[in-house]
Image 1 (cartoon, protein in one colour):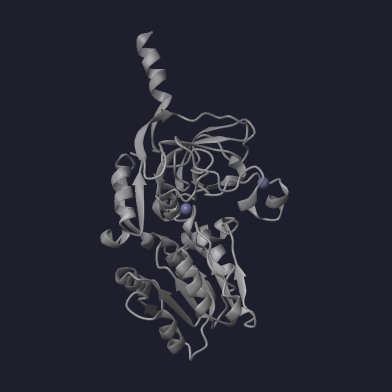
Image 2 (image 1 turned 90 degrees about the vertical axis):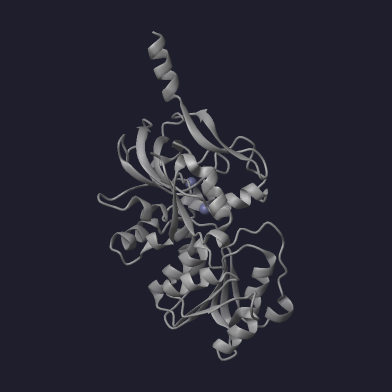
Length: 359
Ligand SMILES: [Zn+2]
Ligand SMILES: [Zn+2]
């Protein structure tokens, strides 16, 4: 009796990374999630990671995230339980979790705009508990999970939950990158690097990375950047004009999310060009219409829809895209506090993406 009681008790608890207000987080015991709707699935996490967005949340930039929320919106795992209405997945299936939850049925989903799903969108680790835990509940599992192909490298696939589709959809597709173009990417963190990798699908002539961190700039060179500019050591606008015959860049991708970098993008874009914003902005930024009104430019914003995940999965599987090179550090899931410290001091630690393994 007693033993059975404790056995049941044990399965119902799990460990998770819990947000307790700005700058406060802890690795603690929480209840294991259960199926709440027939369309839910419970996934046992095998690998997860930390996103720049999680750092924004911890800075207090995302006030909708409330005390007690489990963070995280990326990961790979195994289906522990599938609700009765889930038809694409069953217990034991190996799955990739999309950072965007989508019902597949509402008006926005029908338009492929999963990010604004009326019954989902970016909710994981935001409005509902997320993936930095031993288990996670995924609503609308049929449309929000992807089968992991047999023989795949799990760690490479974790990069497909968020950063690769984000860099590609918000940066490259919205930025209208074309063969022969000049692309400037402001910010050489994981998202900027994901744009750098996926921009190369379209064979632009030049990809110029701009960042204050020399290590990240040298990584960018290895990932295919043709030129780099350290905007702390030099005048990025003057340097870019010099590199482009005074024209500017056809596509400028903002991959930082502060007013200064968005304003810098406005000084880098060529007439007829596009500024594609990816950054999560917590403050207003000035739009310089006094210089841009006659320049025929386009400014785009987007929350990733993850509609390109199946395509990106194929490019990773066929090794056309080496997503694993974005991973610099490995930790056990139980060492997540240490992993946050490393990721939060990215320049000091030379960190890009960290992988957390649930052992
Ligand atoms: Zn993210
Ligand atoms: Zn929907």
